[in-house]
Length: 154
Image (cartoon, rainbow, N blue to C red; front, side, top):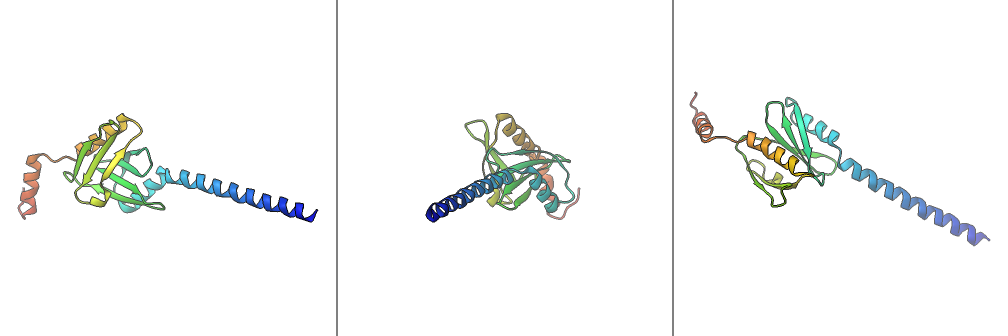
């Protein structure tokens, strides 16, 4: 009789451990796709920038933001934190992926942030590419910045 009771107790302990492990894994997955945490992290990194809109990638590993003055930024999920990067005009190269829902982006100022990003819809990918296009510098602007960079004023 004692052996049966111990077997039942052991089975209940194993069942409880399995259940709590599964619940913790589901909670971790939910935390990974938390845009609220990303917004807070971006606010800490860039307190003077106001977020206007954001789009999360399909896997939740990156969130692209459009700021109040039409600048753009990206936040990469690092597990318990987000690595935030403000995209400077003319410092990103974008190539569309063949599936229409993704972009391959090379950040010239932050190569570690570069990569391929797949969105839930083609419309989201197109909107993010337009945000990055808003950060595009024309040749005249690049020449003007080159003059400013050499100590000249315009």
